[in-house]
Image (cartoon, rainbow over all chains, first blue to last red; front, side, top):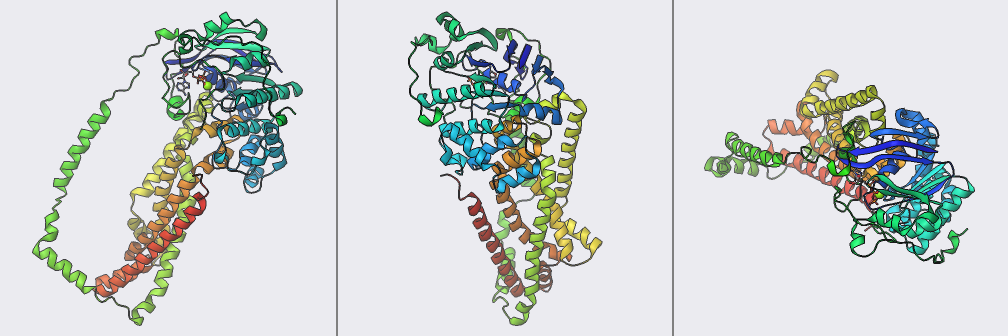
Length: 271
Length: 334
Ligand SMILES: Nc1ncnc2c1ncn2[C@@H]1O[C@H](COP(=O)(O)OP(=O)(O)OP(=O)(O)O)[C@@H](O)[C@H]1O
Ligand SMILES: [Mg+2]
């Protein structure tokens, strides 16, 4: 699905966020990305979803060189990629239903987009997506009145409505409680399995990454530190990945946790 | 956004020195500046060897600017012959007293008041139509004059990189829009009215045109400033779903900017009521025409009545717009 060849991103001519990165992701693959804060995960995602162009290197999406795309063709490719943002990026003043349905904006003709602001078109679709993330009752609430975790789930619902081929989830569970987090990760994985969607997820929780994803990539200083099946990731790998971070001095280097049963997730999430 | 930094499990905290602004994580700050201009090709060196020097902007600017401003201020005070004491000298005092005492009692005779019905209505109509026209002209031009929509920042990052001619075109339309808005604003509404009276004759219509054009300049500029300062995060997210610019404006930009846009437009309407009084002086209808006549005849009793009426009108518009504003923003979360 993706083929990256020596892709770099340099900000302001001095901050190297992604450094000559090679990466191959097959269609339908599920992979987790871990790494310190500032390792370049979000920057990589913004290149993968065609928001920012790489400073150098080539990026192929579905064997398509997207470097020169513009206008309608660019939008058509973007439509096939769904992103769940770390900061949710919802419009606070809009009702939840509009935020969820905005996943459809790429597909809707303009008149329907306009009319939907007055009377939501396909409200059932939004309801269904919200049910999947467990907050259907919030459909007509103002988005800014929701808690952080609820907003995060609205953002996920927006991507569900968009129904893309690739889901890029940037810390999709950073503001929900651990039980719910596991539930949401599982939901996204199930979804990608059933519909053969490609799923790439940034996670700060090493446990979640190792427990749920067949392939785990460690990113450090904009480079790939390791790219392994979850079973082959050792404590050494993790120590290198997080070396020099404050966590190390605090004797808190993440390590392979004892395989503990994933805490019960909320019933409506297991559907 | 709440909770953006709370992780549910262990994470690598800030390791090496990062250049993010505290509190904002990665890119929520101001992409327009961060992403607008990057050197297209930078030799990629290992992280430790990045050249940090020479890229910092000089910090002399605030100091130099402050000094210049102070000098200008002092200079202006002298050159503009600001002498507050003049107001309190015998001569000035006497004239003011004469002017004020001449206002009493205000002229409330029926013969005068009955003349005012039409001008009052006309003033309201001029201000309303003028503001409406200003919005109709100012909003589209304001959109073009919004840099984050036309050529800067996250919504244009990719498109601008993809094609140079397109980038130039966008930048040109931005500059043109700004120039037009400036022109509209530089010429005072008084002068606009003067010209339109020549063009279309006496009456309220030249007043409408004058307010429409000059206020379009002000509204357009302020709209563009408001739109430039909305949170770009949601816009980026909408763009990533494949939404076009127009749809991003509808679903991301306008909902965020609406309170400020409405609020400022209502304020401009209030100003238009006041302005339409002045425009009467050059024959553009409304209550101003009557004001001009009374002033010319040194009938301060009538002037008092007219000013009082104007005051009531402005206060009324103010109260009305406060209600509208509340209706829109009252649902805000506390
Ligand atoms: N728009 C930008 N302008 C300048 N520098 C940026 C920008 N976005 C990111 N960076 C820099 O790029 C580096 C990587 O940032 P990025 O957001 O990709 O990290 P991350 O791995 O997502 O971190 P986190 O886990 O905290 O979300 C950081 O040093 C950051 O300061
Ligand atoms: Mg990030």
